[in-house]
Length: 380
Image (cartoon, rainbow, N blue to C red; front, side, top):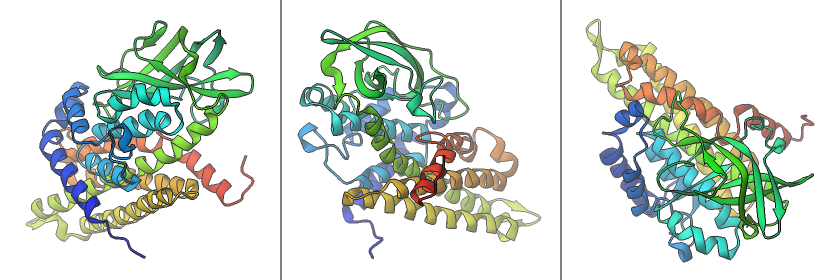
């Protein structure tokens, strides 16, 4: 068994780390404080090819394996989760539904700009009354001639209202017992983007509610087969769970590095606090969690690349890594003491940001349900 990253992976990690430390880290606190979405930096991420890592070369992508995407997300999350989720959602939720299921017409129209990072796309799944129970989707799309007429609302949608958002792909009921995915271009009459949320974390990430009132789009904006939307978004979420796990690994790595460095320099009672077991053992536990989470995430990514089943492994990786990240951010804040409670300290921001890792792309409770069913248990 080979657990080593290859030369391509190592080169990508070095490139993204340098970019993250030079362009994101010095500004992330201010972006967080001001709830500012840095469009210029997102465009730079596009110029580096980050949004096109896994896309086909035909659309301007690199055609690389999923591990490359996880590495990029991990390195961004190590300094700022907001920019990491911008990439993760831009690829997993924005590009992938069209890339994997869209018609040639949809691909030709949208993918070149999305893959190049000149535009972003959102994925409208969650609704005010349909979160973990995504099958309870109430948004409706009725076919009227050669147009879909859409009515409904979506909640907590990432990359949905930026200056460079070009579309959202939404789930909608297209019949009594069917859910389909439909592309809605930005600016379509009847499509309203609500004011940005004020959030506990991920404050530099773009998140909005969406409203559709007699919104008309061409019938050809259907993504894949009519009535296959439920299966499509389940597949999309499996990929996203691995990617969220990679975000959590970046958070864990950050907490480990920050805590070890602080424990070496901060003194109490005449000695570095890292010389006390109470602190040293916290750092040791972070090392264990980081290594375990990384192995789970990249195993799931590898299984996806092999083309076989990976739903169970994706759920395990996401569950463990996200909950470990919560523990690590809490313990890192404790290592920093009073300084850790200050927003100027990176671990403080990571602590606030990390909570949503247990919620997005399926809550911890949903992951446990998926895992239980994978074990053959008759869980309702």
